Every structure is written in C-alpha cells, then in structure tokens.
Image (cartoon, rainbow, N blue to C red; front, side, top):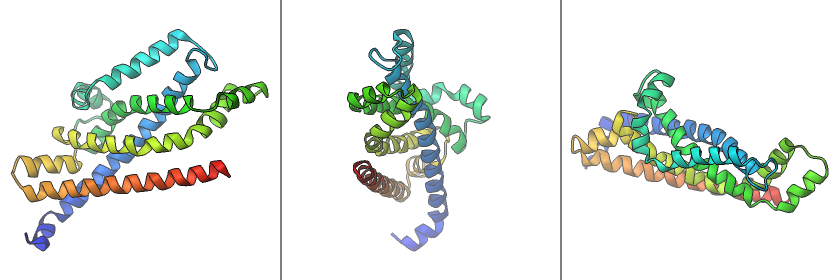
Length: 225
C-alpha cells in the first residue's frame, strides 16, 4: 500500500471523521452524565431507606431507567428519529446523533451513579445528617464527593460504550468514523479505509482509558490526603 497516496486521498476525510466522532462522544458523555447524575441521585435519595424515601417516585424513575436501558441502541436510534427531528431540526450529522446518544447512555450512567453512591459509607451519611446537614449538602458533600473515585472508574466504560454507539449511528448518516467505515469500507469495498477507521478507533479507546486511569489515580490521592 502506498501510504502517502492513501493519506493524500483520505487523510482529510479521516481527520474530519475523527473530529466528528470526538465531538459526538464528548457532547454525549457530558449530556449523559448531567442527566444520569440527576437520575441516579434521585434513585439513591428516594429509595427505601434513603434520605427522602418515596416508593412511588422511586418505582417510576426506576421503570423509566430500566425501559430505556432495555432497548438496543440501533432500535432506539430509529425510534427517536421523529423526536430528534423535532428537537434538533435534522436527523443527519453530528447534532442529530448527540440526542439519541444521550438518551441511550443517560440511564446507564444513572444506574452507575446509584451503585457508586450505594458504596458510600452509611456512617458518613448519618454523621452529616446528625450535624444538621441539608439533603443537598449530603448529596454534594457526601454522596458525590465520596463516590467520585467509583464514578471516575466507570467513566471510560461509558465513553467507550458511546464511542461504539457512534459507529452504529453512522448507519443512518450521523457522520464520524462509523459513517466513513460504512460508506467506504462496506458499501464500496475499500478495505484500506475500513482498516484505517478501526485503527483510529483503537487508538481513541487506548487514549480514553489511559486518561481516565490517570484521573482515578489523581482523585484517589486527593481523597486520601
């Protein structure tokens, strides 16, 4: 293979696809964590034995989260096309992919947040409550702060999962590396382009995992100090 000729022909395309994929992953991860932290914390607070137990609200939120998690992403992506068009104004490109990615990943994050907060020492919660801390203070200063290392350990799983979803989103014209792999590697039988997209995705996964591992180490050191 003439690598110079290949990069001269497809370099700009692959670079744009990498940028589009990175934007989809970053925007979707941010949105999924914002919604997921809210839902997961609500599940913790409203659960039986929680700070503000409410069986009905807990059951409703839990049902919504479980229902969203049960749908394969490609089905959810197609199901949300009318909603995506109404929210974003289009069903093509990076902006259109971000909305269903958030909807798909947020429930997963919510359960991860609930699990992380469940690992927080109950004694710390009771001590904060006995000292007159409000529910908001317990959530922010106990649950989220003490659960942060666990949340960071789950971060690469969420990001890499979303990265895989972006490839599936390429089947409906979402853009990014998945779209390139399908249009060039699959539909036009250009194996070299397919291999290039796979290599880029592998590199992205390794970078994500390495950065997240460093964040966990830094967080653990600060929590122990």
